[in-house]
Amino acid sequence: MHQSIARRLCLYACMTALPGITLSLGCQQLKSSSIAHHEAMMPIEKGSVIFIHPDGAGPNQWGAARMLHVGPDNDLNWDKFPAIALYRGHLGDNLTGTSNAGATIHATGVKVDHDAFGRSRGGPAGTKLLDEQGKPISVALQAMSRGLPVGLVQTGIAPEPGTACFVTDVKLRNEFDEITRQLVEGGVAVHFCGGERFFLPEGVQGRFGPGSRKDNLNLIDRAKELGYEIVYTSDELKNLMASRTPGKPIKVLGIFARDHTFNDQSEETLREQGLPLFVPTAPDVGEMTEAALAILSDYNRRFLLVVEEEGSDNFGNKNNATGVLESLRRADRAMGVALDYIEKNPKTLVMTTADSDAGGMQVYGYDLREDAKPVEKVPDRDANGAPVDGIDGASTAPFVAAPDRAGKRLPFGIVWASRDDVAGGILVRAAGLNHQHVRGSFDNTKIAELIRETLISE
Image 1 (tube, helix red, strand yellow):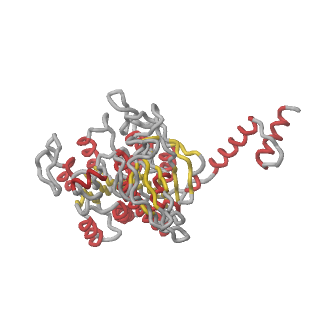
Image 2 (cartoon, one colour; image 1 turned 90 degrees about the vertical axis):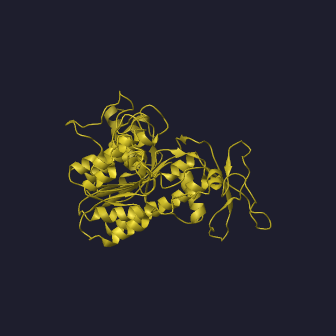
Image 3 (cartoon, one colour; image 1 turned 30 degrees about the vertical axis):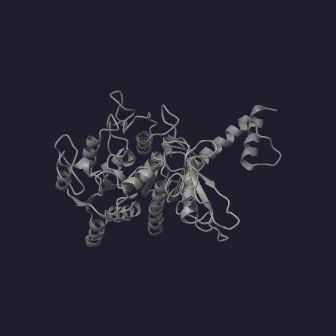
């Protein structure tokens, strides 16, 4: 058969999916090309973007959270996002993501190395990520250069990379003082975080304790000079939101703890020290998200809001199952806030993903006994030697899921694969404007691409 005729028949078979047609490699390539062309033709509308990053959380973590908080037959807000894609999170030099490199890729769309923080890689060899005109390619910095407001919500310390990499760049991840300085000077409209000690000089007393900066800079004073209103607690944030004039733009810096707004230790350590999972006076990530959206909306322009629940990652790295599940309950509330927002403001894209799987947590279910009483406690380790957690760590009572559709509440434990971040089966989910572009296999560089095309590109 003539090659051009065979090619046309193959294309016809690909396009019409005729039964009984066996696709050759060439036809598969044509089909893939056709799909890619179709996706390229899908229009991208302009609007605001909310990017929510529950750090370290894959579908295994979300599955456990669903079982515990709403039951295996019900939906979390995370389940309600209509678009879903498989996240490819490899880095330039590593198959497993790091928080700083993952955030840099999310912010810029450039595949960087594992030690990058807003740059191509860590150390003196790293270069700034610039466009052809020599300007930063971070979507947040590009937005602000066009007069669009940006907000950062972070439950960890201010220099946590999941949000900080969107507006800062340094040679080393542990340059906390410099990262915090760049954050204050960076010009975001609203910034909620922990880490007060990085805002104050060493020995200077703050709301939550003494500062730790070595350069004698008082960044809280500097923030006030730049026009920020400062709040320190959930109550102060509520009072500010109640007293503000809707439609009148303001700049707000919320600093809600000396370090993280959570205590990222194992269950056993928290029990010994009498510490709660989260700082009681700090707003949760849902409250922060709700306030940030109200503040950004007052600017009456397209905006970018980057939200990170850091507890889901840090507790996972400590193998604290209760901490992870509480962090995800809070992150899910933030997603509910975002979904409610797009109901009233449909010109908004909400996208959520993680960059790795913290601890590789898995659910292990236990059968109900004949007397319908759950097992008394989980073992320290499973038969393969992996650590097992119950509601308060090893050798404690199992978690009990919320009722299923039959009304049963089934017990389970959490089994851990690691104390590090692993590659995991991470998902990207989306709702609202342009959500149809989140589909199939979604490289981590596409996060920035979709944010840029929705928010900035003309």
